[in-house]
Structure formats: C-alpha cells, structure tokens
Length: 61
Image (cartoon, rainbow, N blue to C red):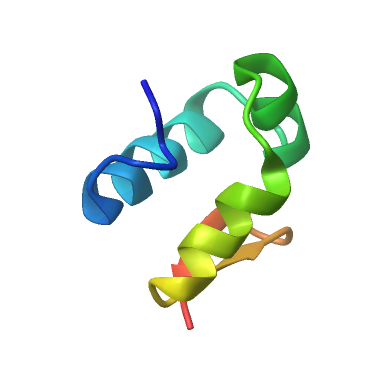
C-alpha cells in the first residue's frame, strides 16, 4: 500500500483510520510502515491537509 501515490482521498481516510485505531502518532505509523514522514506530510499539505498532533489526524487547512 503506497500512500504517496494512491488517490489522496483514499489515503486521507486510510491514514486517519490507522492513526485512530493503531498508532499514537504519525511518527509511529511512518516508522512501522516504512514511510517517509516528510514526503507524506508534504503530499498531504499540497492537497490541502495538515497533520494535527493534538488530535493525531490529518485535517483540512
């Protein structure tokens, strides 16, 4: 599963579900899934989303 290339809406939904159900932070998710956090955050920001550490999810800007 490649969150860096899949449709942004599907990636948004899947990542937020994983953050909610399995991971306490984006760092943990990226480490476990071997994903570049900086690339992931950059891709989401280009598509209108930012990561909120307070809520541990991506939200719309």
